[in-house]
Image (cartoon, rainbow, N blue to C red; front, side):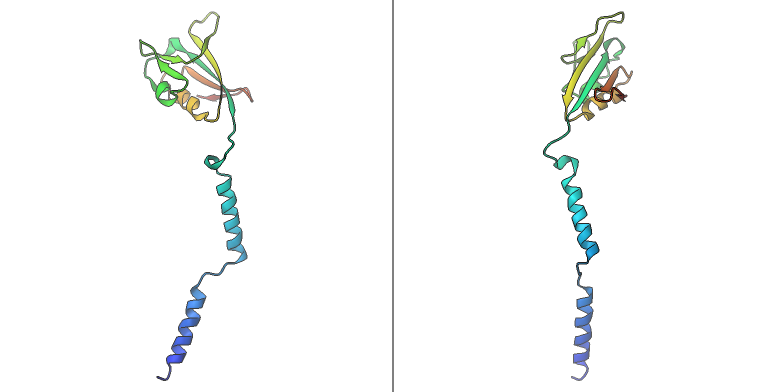
Length: 136
């Protein structure tokens, strides 16, 4: 059939133009994407260790239990259902019931969430590297 060769040639030219070609821009995007994936926090083999101080005022506890739900590694409940700072040392002074614990952790969000979710806000988290209070 006359004209078939023209249609076939046109369709082949159209097909070749629709195939993706790798340009310098797409090569750069792929390289930057792989760099991003390699640097993603959860993929890191070595994670930063945070030095934190947890300060807890047991007298102000209202027994809501949010500290234990948020950070079961550092908090537990006593027989009155008040929070206890595990391995926390009670500070001597005029105000009894203040407990302090210094920790090194790769997961600081646990202690920070415990401080943020505490209903009466009797938990504080201090970054020992900067000396700043980071929660609540």
